[in-house]
Length: 244
Image (cartoon, rainbow, N blue to C red; front, top):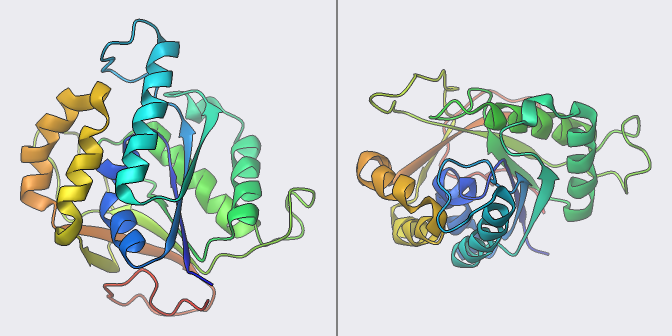
């Protein structure tokens, strides 16, 4: 039985822009990778050829599918929450939808955003972190959403974090990292996945020299929860100590 990794993100392009290294490396190792994206990105600032938000959402869904193929993500799903409005969504609904999917996908490890909202301090990212954290803890609890499938307790929860700030942006407050991944070998794959988001190319082409040419060889994660009490130690493997 293969190890399983679930990434919980907010928007199409988060999977490559934020988590692309971890996802591509995991796929190379034969780990089954899945993605849950809470919105279709239809409130994005860049529209490509789309004339309406509905058209933009449809384009971004197709772009996400292309990116997932490049990154080796085996399955992905976009939920129907409104882009840019997650802070106003029902937290119980968000968490329940994620609990149900965790119980279906049964991941050993979950990766998601930290509470800082990442380098662009996006409120959707912060809400995604909160809902994913609750779902991580609740998916194995018989007290929470007992009708939403067979209980499952993942073994690790990680938050994306960073060791740098982007000049000119409002500074976020990142979590201290416990895990550093050398993702240099999959950087070309990650860049290709980013460019698959054709509606977002102006953003991507600005970000590549600003962020990925300088910092694209590593990704940093903070271990947020584990099954057994343990000290925070440095590692280079998100699956270290995980039991199949």
